[in-house]
Length: 267
Ligand SMILES: [Zn+2]
Image (tube, rainbow, N blue to C red; front, top):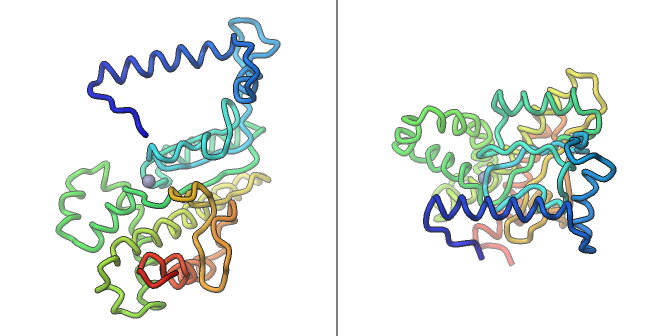
């Protein structure tokens, strides 16, 4: 159950009190694993000393409030370098942030692109893709357009994968827009992770790239059920090695039982 907050001052008060409570954790002796983990930050340091920045992974996630990156990976302070932006797209600022993490923070070993089911940014983009009149509204907002246009290539690939595997009549299905959005979410995370790996290759680093979808229903990360594979949401996945592998992934998702379920033809 989410908090019901009626005004900006009330929101300010909640955040201020929440931070005061968080800061008190560092003085507490309560035997709680999470509290101990937080307190590790300042163990042995003087009152005004700053702990060293020491995350082991960087994560590019969506801004969606239902996907709090540290929480869903059971991590806490100083463990993840997190960049969040609607649709988990790789704009210049995001790439710049990850470049910093990879080049200036030696503890970082992994970069993860994390999409999620039910992504509002992606569903807005697929809605605009399917209804050009909607795009007129989105296009008027330059900042939003920059996100939507980064999502379009993945939507196009998801669209053709659905047509090729399910037949053109799928476009008439009442759930088609939703299905297109959900397949596009997987394709987008894979595309962004592939781009991230290309960035990493330029650095001659051993840092690796992965991607995954966080499923809002099961709370698990991985990729949805694909054609010919029983398992779903089984952890982080290496990005496709080339365009052919990316296309194969899109087709396997489009033809898989996850999409069967969304179309009402599954179990
Ligand atoms: Zn989202």
